[in-house]
Amino acid sequence: MTQLSAILIGANAGLSQALALQLAQEGVRLGLMAADPKGLEPLLPKLGDDTQVVAIDIFDPEGCRAAFDQLWQDLDGAALVIINTAAGGLDLELPWSLDKQIIDVNVTGFTALANAAFNKMVAQKYGQLGCLTSIAGERGGPQVAFHASKAFQQNYLQGLRLHAQRLKLPVTVSDIRMGYIDKMQGRGSRFWSASLDTLARQTLKSLRKASHTAYITRRWRFISWLTRALPEFIYNKRKYK
Image (cartoon, rainbow, N blue to C red):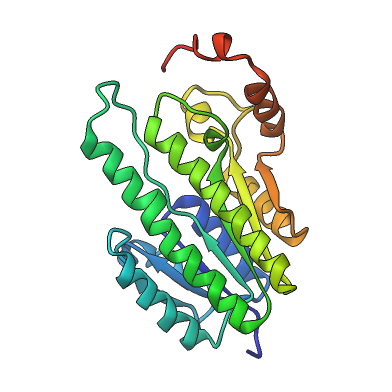
């Protein structure tokens, strides 16, 4: 691998596109995995000519793994893999269809790809896996399956770190915990939200530091601490909005 390469999974997301732009500006060769490759057409002229785009269906985990393996081979490996795929939704009736969709994406699809990336890095003997999770995973909440699925992701990533340490390999696994950015933007809060460029810049800075856990934006670390510190009888009185 003569040029530094990175794979972004879930490339249709706005933050993923901002990450791709910043990485391309640094001369990184990109492989983008997206549900809607046509949606990336306006972005591609701003990236390198050697950028590769692969279509995936997150509801087909085996197909995702096969597509990842092929992209990895085409790029001759990658130093960085970023996973940014998530499903959520609030329905106080708690329909099984919604919970299943969230589990299919955030648990099954996520694990299929994180597992594939980690094993490729083990075989390569180096690399960094960065996954965008959420502070929602630190405690249960109204989006029951979403909170639970993010907790699964965070625990899975910690397990991968344990395996990397056991194998004594320089494989870094980073858990990038996003604050409730979209919700705060919807409420018009500038303090608790940020532009996509800022989110991407802070994310890449945390990855360069090889942080095992980071909060984006950084001030959400305080909210994380406060949420975990609240006693049950207070935490459970929150209003669902």
